[in-house]
Length: 395
Ligand code: SF4
Image (cartoon, rainbow, N blue to C red; front, side):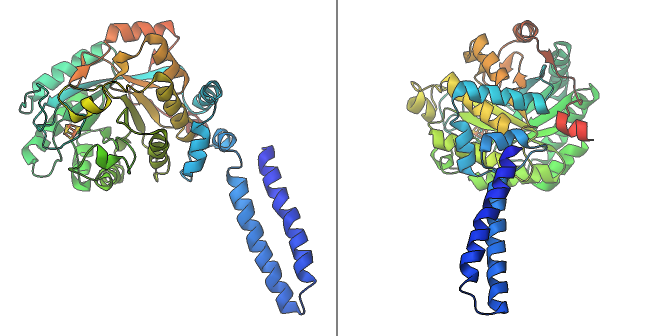
């Protein structure tokens, strides 16, 4: 690429003049050697910094595999690109790394509703808020199998199960039951995902041994903004579970929620956190907050719904800096018009939740989603077949 050549040649020219000016002052061979070493080090540092990413957008489009050396400034530069350009380049990136016509269809089921001890200010299932959601016990394995069969018959290839609680610690019998659910879903030929709060590495390993494909654990927002949304656990707790999940060999499904009162800077920082992880999440859900009456967040943001252009901008930036992740348009999609959803696909989104319900909120149904995908030349992704293109080509 031409920008790399420019970056390399410029420091060399600079260094030559530095050598000349410093050498005239040198009095001996040792001093001259020191000057040369000094200049060489400076030169290499300049080359390294300029060669890397003189233009973050151009750099994003030149990488052959995902990189995690992004700076916040670089991600901000991409995020601030005029939207039509940003969408175009995100689509170019999408076509480099993804099968452009494929969209993964997932169905999410609540296997344990309500009564959660956590205080997430947006959540209908926290026992702290009066949202009308009743606490229930974990459901039976048979109910899960029936729901998964229905989802499969309607075209979903990933089945996700969510339990409203803080963590898996001390839940041995529940873990046993969830493992049965996972194995049953796996035996149906579907990918499986669970979201069960915080897990340690042993629990994650156990879930994997039952056949689990991925573990969902969102970071929700940026570290600085996190305490304004949740106080019963820390952002670092979140990252710890993410590490335990990846450390067990499971795929991580980790993203966040837009519309929690965060600033544009927070959003850039949220993407920066994900893009600089040792290994990017396999799946990156982007939720549009659905404000729930009775939650503290409802009062704070009920008249400040995040705009579609901001969702598109976030997805496009994510696609450019995390090219191999599956970007999943999650909760709140039902609030978007079809053309708005299509803009998200253009920007690099390639997964949706579809079915009867999205935990406690509404969800677009299978029939309307399949009709939408067909209309726009998109088709459902097959289960267990996902492979980023550049990686596949290089394999
Ligand atoms: S988001 Fe999850 S952890 Fe937070 S209150 Fe709701 S169910 Fe509990």
